Image (cartoon, rainbow, N blue to C red; front, side):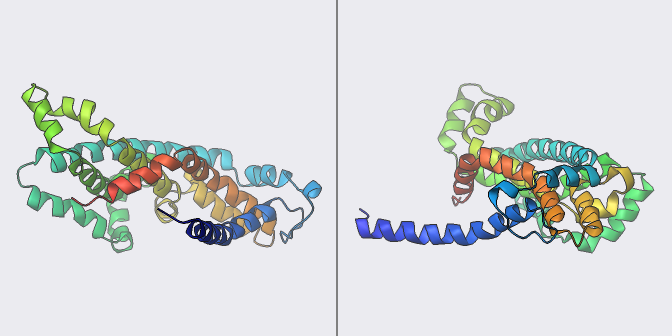
Length: 270
């Protein structure tokens, strides 16, 4: 039982930590709304909401964010599907040779992107996949699926084995158990994987800079180009940064509880 004094101390510590974390965010928002080029704070009535419209228009965020959304949605859908199938195979079905195959899958998490970016670029150029959306989606899937399989395997192995044995005795097939039992029971972990996959794909800058150019640039690359043009206008740079960060922030706020429960579920040891 937590005493009243301990509860008060906990709230005080959490409040201090929240202020420390949110202060830079608040400063960034105030700079984005400032009419002053340097982003200095102003009165509430003097907020320049037009900074967001200016940043949106000058950076051509409408096209760039559309491309980023298409890439992120395709990557998330593909990664979650492959992670469900792979994690279910390794965590529940126990595929033949999983003690050898699973470490091979984990190698995809250990290889640094910077170490393979040059040969990867030339290989994709040979197949005509540079500066194409299918090419960048394929790369993101290759980089993200190993983590997804690892994540879902841990989530599936934390489920009660007796439930699958009972369903198997009742005649349920492997795909039926995945669709009707495993996936619903591991829903928090799936939501967490969706959020992480979307966040990593949306925030990508390096791959998009190397493999996409011209009219196919993503939101993060468009933001980099925009900041290069308005390096002395802090208010417009902050406004552009908030526009690019908005989808991830909104998604996190909507799925906050599911994200936390999914993180806790994924922390359970096998």
